Length: 276
Image (tube, rainbow, N blue to C red; front, side, top):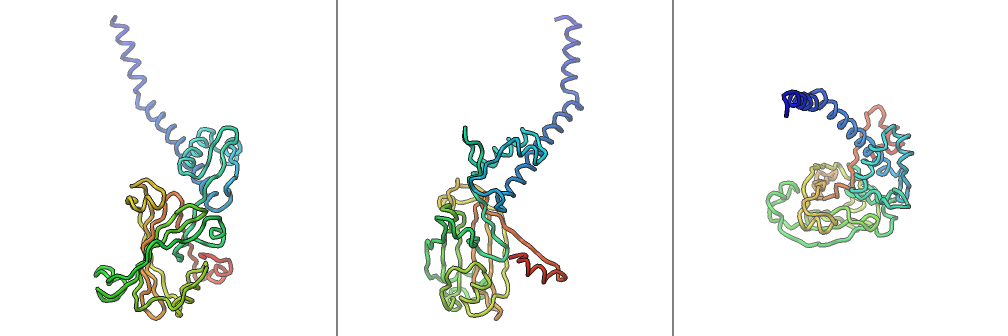
């Protein structure tokens, strides 16, 4: 190799590795990924709000125009949604919406509203129900004495024949519901019908956790897949804690929704079912 050739190669390497070139490439890649995320968010939101129900055909060319995104960004977003199980992509038929996202409102326990309950295969299955002495840590939450009897109930919730939630509740035997309530979609109404006293508050804490093997098997997930764990405490207007529950929701099939109103718009919010 001649000295000139060596200098030329050194110059080429410096040119290829020039920081400005690297930054430009990284910026372009970041912009494309950002565009793909935006398309993903908008399409997923449409599915969640029912604007794109199951069977809806999604055309890449139409999406590029509607969302002002490149075809590559749209394609990457659709691939991600397909991996989530929300879309089905087949040669000859195109890309269609294949799944749904259940919505759990912050003041509700489960999302079997009128729309979800009417889907074939939807329902709540009781997996286990038994009495047991209350552990000390749970006794503090339920505001009972450790060792007092509580009723454990484990339920599996299906929407459209797909398991989406595994829920375990604990109720003090001394405060069990007075009656069995049928299909009531509003938690406050169901609570008052069951206990004979109005509900005062719902306290919830939500965190993302990895699914254990048992949960994963029941929800049709791989062990370690992300699930939303929601701890909920229900208190009645007489000051008694009536129930503490732990619900695990499929992270790819459920969204938690919270709505709030300022006092000045409370009446208009109620009339428009804000937060319902």
